[in-house]
Image (cartoon, rainbow, N blue to C red; front, side, top):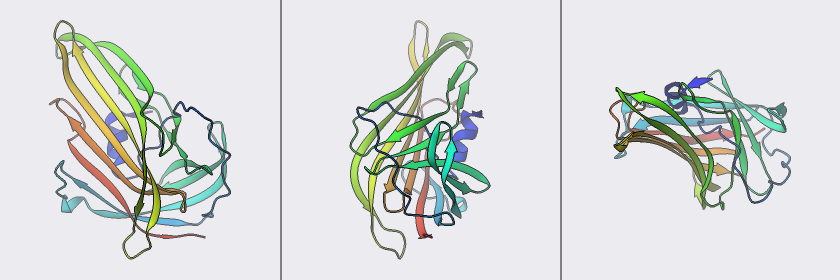
Length: 239
């Protein structure tokens, strides 16, 4: 299991939203035959900004993700895409209705408050869907209270994304939200930390073309700095 801090620092460097199995009104269709084949690569520009969008020039790097297989059996699913990025692995499933699933490892918020490992189902037309809620009682800076984590997903429709020097890609826009709230007994809500991940999924590439992770907290004790982490597709090579 990963700590919350480790998980979201990692999310700034690799494709972060390998997340949870959302409750859906209909079951996803069967996985399509992968258009990309093993050996396909996706090259990204990765950088960080403040909440106003000013880029930290020292944060910019270029990384390449490699598609290892499209037929892996993993965590109860078949025909899973395994992606290698910077020595780590992510797990992904593509469906014929332009929806997709990404695997998320478990996240430890604090002792007794853990978001479990799950698949998350994303669909560009889905309404706001709360997929995980949990709370724990504890003492915060000497005051008894409750910490609650809420995870939700939402579809944001269709759009396009154009890699540098490449053709425009049709994309499905989705996002997920991790919200951690601390409430002190007799006082009420004293802090809120929100992590919003916006994803632009390309059905043609069967992969994420752009990812933006926005961290915002009013707590001085939050381990997550306020700002944005961005991954933007520069180029790709399909086998």
